[in-house]
Length: 164
Image (cartoon, rainbow, N blue to C red; front, side, top):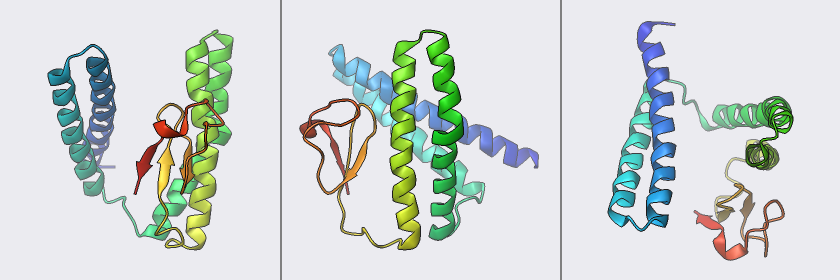
């Protein structure tokens, strides 16, 4: 791996983290009544996302859709089979309840994502008309209609975010 590739990978990771960090900061600013700061954080998050996407494309790792679906399926499967179980065990051992729930939610939802990616591998255009709904607490992802209450975290259907 050359220095440029290493730099792009580090930059992608840093920009991706900054995007999420700024979104979390925006949520907090909004809760505290600082609309101006919240808007600034959201704008910066969007810019960081574009930086991350640019770096990721420059790495040349975005393949054709079938290969991307396979990569996504492998990543989600690794997360729910290997990564999250070990992390949950650590959180339990350290009595970190909030971390445990966060990790358990993610592990459960990665299983759902893996199933969705597996189906999409069979027919990448099968759900072209579908509308997805995502739970803002646990990330539960469903097609066409949210459940009355999220089966993982209990959030009401009206809180799910629509993704087209």
